[in-house]
Length: 228
Image (tube, rainbow, N blue to C red):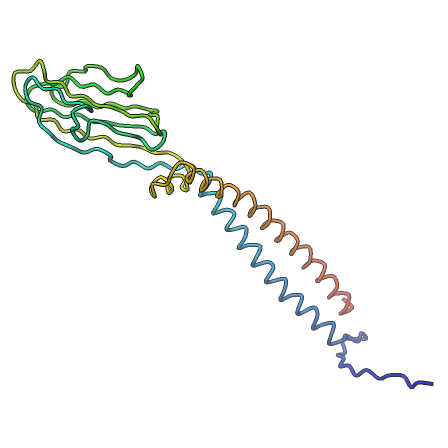
């Protein structure tokens, strides 16, 4: 007959209940793992919220795309075909354009048109200042042309032309435009942002809820072990 094996173990007295030290150690290790899981869950959830803000929340950015001054001589007409700077613009995407024309000297006729389309501002006489807004302004392959006509004047005109562009979209979209990425790369950045928050938010919430359930269960087991 074999003698029974003897297993040494340390125990602690808690009232009338004997609590194995190993069991308490396992509970403590489980608590450490729970804290790590909880921290990981909150980090993932925070990343999901950041991705959501970067992908969905719309913001606006306004910047000057044309700021030029030139002289239009009497009998002269300046336009995109003359190659003068500030007479054409290619919006990178759909946006809003705000322009201001200031004239000193002889008044001129101003026109703003979308190349290839029967649309625009035609022959507005400007002898001091003129402000216009094009909203929405089409982007991608569309070209906006600006013409300054002094063919009917008897003296030269000093023209100052300022054009501002207002872009509205998610921060990721504006970042892609700022980096001057191609259209397909811009869309890839936006899609990756959307996928990120769609994935990270549910995962973060699931990890946090799962850790909460584990902590409740561990608390009940600890009470049972302590005889509470």
